[in-house]
Image 1 (cartoon, each protein chain N blue to C red):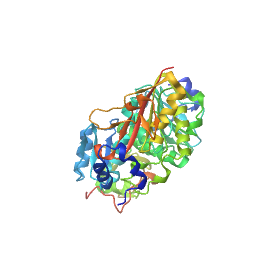
Image 2: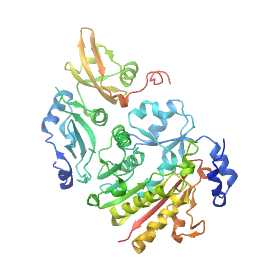
Image 3: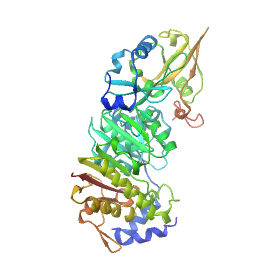
Image 4: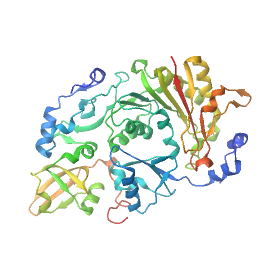
Length: 304
Length: 171
């Protein structure tokens, strides 16, 4: 397996290059999380074991389980019954950091295929309002399938360009903005990731517009979580830095840390550009740290 | 049970009385099962069920609001698979307790035969809920025959398992 040449530029910012390369060459474990609206982690574990699988609880979350890379948990009775959802471990990071509460109004701006929407709805105990938006009608239909299988009763779906999401829809207590990105962090799953695409100016422009709109739609005092599955600083820290500059005192970063999950701090400098010092509060996930895909999360709070 | 002002602005609220009466008559599901929820109709063919404190936006116009509940404008309204799985535990009649082979047929979207003793709580031709090990799998259509009956799987294509790789009997 060839390492994409585009990854070489990350050598100075990865703590253990050999471990990073070795992790990229291993197949990715499968991960499932419990739909606690329907069942318990103990029952999910027992159901998976009865199927001959060996579920291991995640180090940082006892209601989610890791399975060997070749497992097919999507073709089981408990899956059809909506007892669990299959989703990569790093995709479980943004929602606990968003920390949605029952009864709140929460927007998932780029929601399809809906795994994170579902996590939000479950955390809200199937009460209140989750608005799940996507601009792609086919992917939105996939999201509806997720809502139906998991039995979610608090989700509205909308089809709209997220960067131009109507302001009268707000305000929201919390907004998740899980932007389209170059997906470098998916390399272990899909070796065709378009590395030439990483940090492309049009993509970064869209990401910046989406985050800016997310902040605009959020209540003062509310929380915004920005996430990507790429290593590219142009799509991560640089986007957040641009939006922080635009909002000034009205926006600040909160620590993006989860106990038991190993991450690296966000960059405060890249290619000679000095970034806002608080960007070290963001979370960078290198695949070798927890044997996962790559990811980036920043947690922001709107002050006014 | 009218929903929030935001819900009323965003989507058509539906009078649930006839639908709840139908579900009580056919399946014995008490209307109180749906306390805390509102029925709405965002499109043409389907009624949805949503939590009563829901506050969706009016713009952009919602595509779906909550969970699909019933498909209407049929001879008899059909309970959605999602609603059957969510609320089917409350049903007391027109429920088939399937064995593993029958459940496997249902989930792979094939018809299956039922024995007379499985029809004790069935009132005749029409929709039935198919249960396996206490879990409601979805909706079937029962056609009673001399030696029991036949159940057509109404599981939507998107929920169906592939018979080549799915099995309840051999892990």
